[in-house]
Structures are given as structure tokens and as C-alpha cells.
Image 1: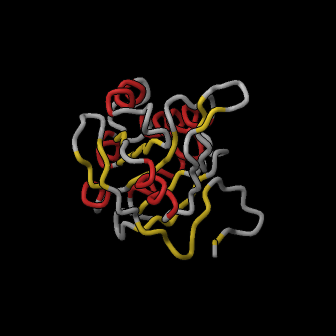
Image 2: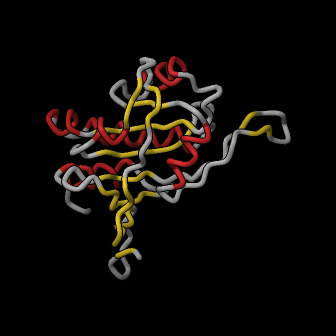
Image 3: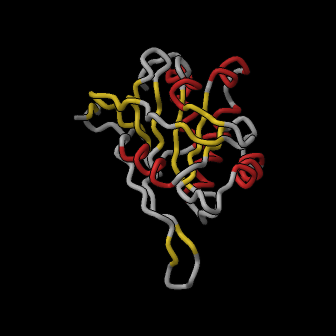
Length: 184
């Protein structure tokens, strides 16, 4: 069940029943073990599954988040955790993720690891991802859901879901509330 005001044009969908943060232990851009639940506990957290070779939605989504974050006061920027989990771990090594994310926002946590583990974590959030495959032109693509899930610092529950149509303005408007643990 979701709650949305009638006629509302909000980019965010507020869930009646929150998602639990995935129990993922992956590798960060420094090559170190990163326990998602432990590292983000009590922190406002945005999680997105994508890949660095994505031609459109992934870089746009991550740049929208980075631009919106930069409009926050410094203390709120420091509090917010943005986590990018690759859906193409074979190509998105720790180093490759680090290089790609550095061009977007060096504070974003980039995670890679075993595809099956990543897929299972995404599935707990209702996000579908398929193993990378070759398209008709021989290019490797990764089919994945494009939702950003926002987790409350109060409960660590994922109450807010954004689709690929969310804009910088949508995130800019909502982030201060999300950081306080409020729904937009």
C-alpha cells in the first residue's frame, strides 16, 4: 500500500509499510568490506542500483542526487549517505566505481561484489535486476529497476521511493525532510 494525496504530482511515493534495509556486505571503492546496515545505521540514506557503463538513467539519477545534495547546508550534506550499488560487478570493480563516482560526488559510497548477492539485496527492495547481457549490437547492458529508496535515520526503514522521473528540484525539495526522518 502507498499513500499519495489525491491529484498530487509528487515525485516521491511514500510507502505505508517500509522496506527493511538490505543485509548487504559488499566491497567499497577502497576495496574494503562495507556492511550496508552497520555503516548507514541511524543515517539518512539513499540507495540506488545501477552501473557505470549505463548510457542514460544511471548517470542522470546520480548527478541529480549530487546536485541536490550540494544545495544542502554543509552539516546536512555530511549527514546524508548516498549509496550506489552496481548491477554490473564484473566491469564495475572497486577502482572503476571510484573513478566514475569521483566525477559525480566523491562522497557517494560505491559498492560492488557478487552479482547474486547484489541481486538478492535489490530484490528485498522490490527492485528487479538481471545479469548483464549483450544487446543486439554486442554491447553489454544491465537491465535494472531505476528506483531510489530513501531510508529514515529514525527507523532505518525505507519509506520513500523515487522513480527515474525524479528531478533535481524534487530531491532538493525533499532532502531536508528526509534528513530529519520526515516523509516529504
